[in-house]
Image (cartoon, rainbow, N blue to C red; front, top):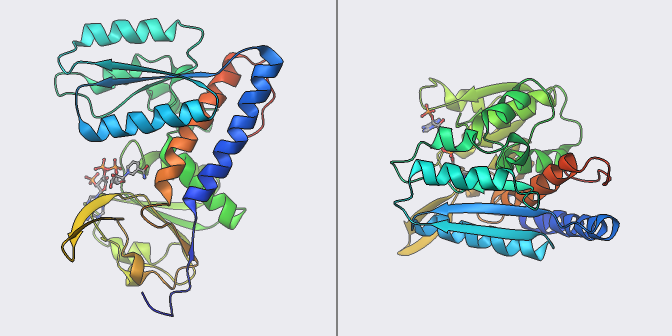
Amino acid sequence: MNNLFQAERIDGKGFAANLVERLAADVRSIKTDTGLTPGLAVVLIGEDVASGVYVGAKHRQTQAAGMNSFVHKLPAETTQVELMALLAKLNSDAVVNGILVQLPLPAHLDANAVINAIDPDKDVDGFHILNAGRLATGQDALVPCTPLGCLMMLKNRLGDLTGLNAVVVGKSNIVGKPMAQLLMGESCTVTVTHSKTRNVAELCRTADILVVAVGRPELVKGDWIKPGAVVIDVGINRIMRDGQSRLVGDVAFSEAGHAAAITPVPGGVGPMTIACLLANTLTAFRRQHPLHTNQTIAG
Ligand code: NAP
């Protein structure tokens, strides 16, 4: 990086901390007004180390925001029938307002069937087919946490997004596709690119907003970025550099100094994802208790 690096670093960590503070204040009001405490159930199957770390972080932050956290750890050999039975129990449990099944699942489990067995009104990951359909058709949905966090940061930085050219690199169900839907919802002109796109770099150069969610370290080079663009780097890649293990994004950060703003990795999109999970849990609570609570933050 050199002195010409002018891009603002979007402080996802600070933004997320501020959001969680406001959510915690809402939780306190809900408790005072109703005597109820919003609750999130997280289901973890198997021993995947990264999944265990994510679930631990979700548990701690849910509690720190004043909500109930229910973590269900099941062995890797859990059957589909056993998992469905747990989900049915959580679906009908009034103290559970949000349900999340940590992905990836062991190979013998059918992830789509599992996701679609969650009550869509408790589906705080926003992966249920009904929530995907609601988002696609502009109806009230629980929206996947990572793109929701990206949109919040974009709106905070840019205000009205109407008419801006947005390019999304990556078309996964959990990031790229819902991100494109959200940007269309803001009346952006949206281009979605993927591994078979012939001219990704050229399309990226048209972007006022560039969202990259690929999982390839530093795929997006400086000359793919239009001067003045706002760049959201969703990628999290662990690489070895100079003999040290490091986290890098999907964008070559040091080459992005001519952007108006960019999210760093780490400290950009990552912290917003868990904050938005808490926001979604509160949104789910409010929709399950419409007469009792005022809408403030989450959606
Ligand atoms: P994914 O399911 O593997 O999808 C990757 C997408 O990138 C696919 O659509 C793929 O295209 C596309 N792609 C692959 N190579 C490409 C290339 N050379 N040019 C253009 N597109 C290319 O990944 P994901 O779940 O969306 O995650 C993407 C990254 O975001 C990962 O690094 C992941 O760790 C990170 N992530 C971060 C958070 C967070 O909280 N910060 C949350 C979720 C994910 P095809 O569809 O054609 O295969």
